[in-house]
View: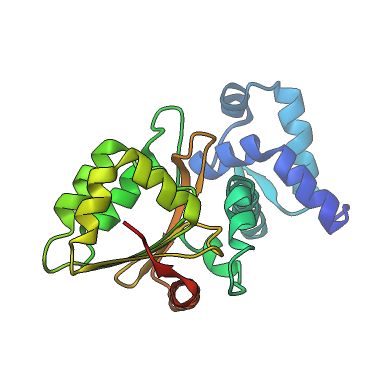
Length: 257
């Protein structure tokens, strides 16, 4: 029988996450091996194990300490919760931007998406993911406000948008001004492409893309480079992206060149 209220038990599982992870990965585990794995004394480990035994989360066997079925379920759900908290923290700037979209959205699809984060070891991981998906799509629809395109990205985009690829963009006035200043040749090139349409809309305050039937939404660091990207092909997400794009496109006017 449990001796703790559920919220206190969950907190204790979070606190002892390292110990439970070590047991989960190599069970059954003698207490002496756990001492080395989690850098804690055997007496502390035995105290914690005894506590979780009373909660029916762990048990001792002749070969060592193992998780019960209940312990496995609770540990798995705790890991899921911690991952969700980490993701929500990372996505906070993106969620704030999407809240300004002209169409309401359900956050559920975001937490079911592929999330690519910039890390110290791979600061351009989200941009690489974006480029990977961009190259493979025949239909590209872009909504842009803050996105800063690196020079090599502009050159790659111009190569990728061939005669068979259709690209439609809706930019904020700031985005258009920035691109006209940084990439005048690209703007002139774009104006001559029959398969590329661009509009400017005052109401654009977010950045997203639809590549065929996949939605991408992204947030930025202080330099404007993508720092986090979510992408998904779930129906609810793509339908929301379609609605946002169509709303902004209808509100926009042709980009002046």
